Amino acid sequence: MKKIKSIFLAVYSVVALFLIGAYHSNLFSPELILGIVIAVLLNLLNLISAVYAFEKSILNTNKQFLIYNMGGMSIRLFVLLIALLLILKFLNIDKDGFILIFFIFYFVQLTAEIGYFSSYIKGLKQK
Image (cartoon, rainbow, N blue to C red; front, side):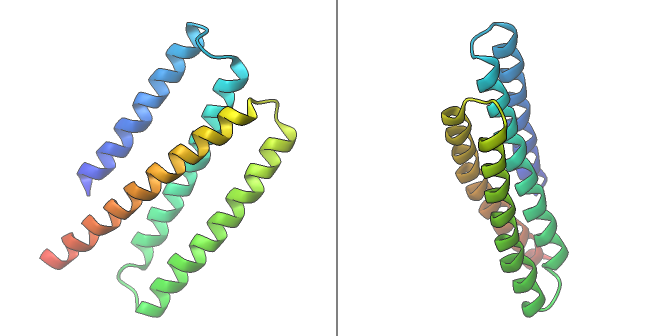
C-alpha cells in the first residue's frame, strides 16, 4: 500500500513540476495551465474521497461496505458532473484541454484505485 501511495505522490509531483516549468517557459497558455490544474485537483479530490470511503468501510459488514462504496461512487460522480458543468460554464479556461486532461487523469486514477484496493485486500488476507 505504501508503494502505491508513493506512486500517487510521485505522479502528482511530476505533474506539478511540469506545470511550473510550462508556466515559466510559456509553453502553454495560462488558460490551459489553469484548466490542467483544476482537472488534476478535481481528480485528486475524487481519489482521496474514494480511498477514504474504502478504508472506512473495508472492515464493516458487506451491506455497509456496499453502501459506502456504491453510494459514495454515485455521490462522487454526481459531484464531479456538477463541478465539471460549473467549471466549463463560468471559468475562463481552455475547455478542450481541461476535458482531455480531466478524462485522462480520471481513467488513470480508476486503474490506480483498483490496484490500490486489490493490494489492500491482499494485505488483509496475508495477516
